[in-house]
Amino acid sequence: MQKNFIDLLKNKAPVLDIISRHVKLTRKGKDWFGRCPFHSEKTGSFKVDPDLGLYHCFGCGAHGDIINFVMEIERLSFNEAAKYIADMCGLQVPEEQEWKKHTPEEIVKAKTYEAIDIIKDYFVRQLKSAEGNEAREYLRDRNISDESLVKFQLGFALNEDLLISQLKKSGFSEDILIKTGVFFKSQYKSGLISKFSGRITFPIIDYKGRCVGFGGRIIKKSDVAKYINSPETEIFIKNHQLYGYPIARHGKSKEIVLVEGYLDVIAMHQAGFDATVAPLGTAISETQINMCWRLCDNPVICLDGDSAGLKASFRWIDKILSVLSPGKSFKFARLPQDTDPDSLILNGQSDIISAAIKNSLSLSEWLWEGAFLLYPSETPEQKAAIVQMLKEKVELIKDHSVRKLYIQYIKQKERDLYLYKKKNKNATITSKINSAIKPVISIKEKIEKILVVTIINHPYIIDRVAEDFAKLEFSSISMRKLGKRILEIYETYYVVGKNTEGNEEISKLEANIADIEKDVEIHAKFAGKNVVSEDEVLTEWNSFFEKYLSDPIVAEDLHKASVSLQSSFSESDWQRLKALKSSALLTAKDRGKR
Image (cartoon, rainbow, N blue to C red; front, side, top):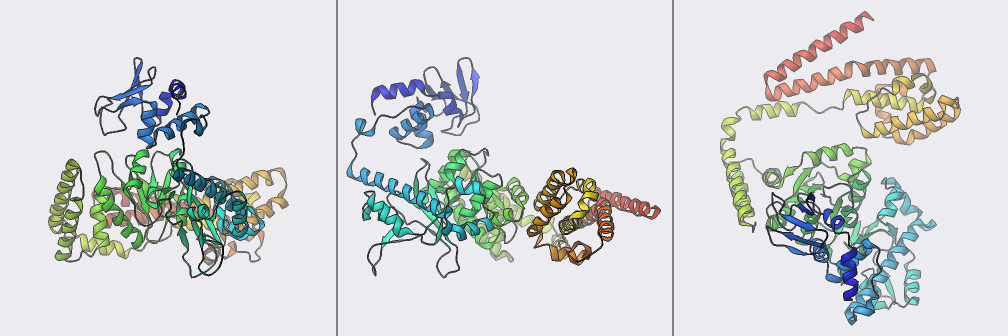
């Protein structure tokens, strides 16, 4: 690249803006200081001089100008870093032929990138077409928003013969089309065949924003694999990519979350976890680990809540342990049994994911706890085998100081294991008592569903109960959304006297209660669509609303306090149970006076 352009770039580069994306800087005189991004430290020995455009770390010796910084932090070549900065400055990079001659291999690679980008855009257009309606319906059923379709550039692979014809007319050879990984030659017919035909396509975008491959999801019932990825090519190495990575880099969240699949990533972003990514398979590589660490020191791994998810986490642990260094690690969030991020969000339960992430275990904790969940541990011999396995695993850690501390941690947990029986004589009995207390759906939540379903099936009562309805504090996100929508309709139509139009709008919400309506009618027949007088519906609705304000909350708290007392038998739990019983008695007496 021409020297005069590089000089111009260094003068124009917003040094502080670029570096502060990765380092929290504090001003001291004319210089700025922060913690070095190239090594772990507790005190800020990383200095930036914006006037000179230089940085220097007094701890590890890292030193250079803004181009060096971008090269190191983003892992780019010199020319790639210069282009990155030029884009930020709004500068036009000189034509490549002015400063670099391409090798034949580079020309082929450039044509491959160009071709796969055209293919990506074609698939996007096909999803929007009339023939893409079935694919769009599938995505709508999975609650994928129109915004996400654009954000993740989802497409649909069909009419590929037309695509191949257009590409050839544009000067792309069959060899280039095969190098994209999208097409292959058949042994049984002439011409090229698409690997992704009939599949929804998920473009895999690298950290430079280039499409390098695709994931594909079949939408019709078939014996073929539901999901496939592009084969590895000159431009696509599977374990060098993370799905959603370019978007996560610019997300508001500072905590990277790793999930398993394409739809998990999209659902997580829609739910506000906008730094979510996924490896393209069941394993994780050193490159992918370092990509995560480039954005966050302690990413969270949030795998499916089944045995496969548990096993996957242990496959990942081996690779993570081998590259651990001071200040860099991972956390593990465990979802409820037989759930995954996509299904939880689809059911309005993103709060469960938030709680799992908030309460995630450190790598060392998960190494121990996960092992005892994954492997049999009933007998002393089985426990000893697990401990021995963990001792061997921590030997994978190459960093001496981290390895030494992990060895100490395993030894301490082993000692705790020996003392466990003495300290917890009643643990087995307590466990059996707790397991006998079957989890029940909250009474409060049941009543909320009854009140909402009643209004949707009998919308004419909203005009008379709106004030009370607005007082409901819903337990679940799905009910909260429905409640909010009902009140919006009330304010739009009923307040201005358009009751008929309002009734129609509320009735349109029926699809949202299809899966709970039968259960609700078991407890409250009046809530169904059967013909009931307006007065009866209104009387029953008010009766359940009164229960919502009194019994459920006290009863549910009593149940929780009782369970807690059986578990710990502490003085504080006993006092809480007595206070709640007293409250329940007062409530009952108050009802008797009415």
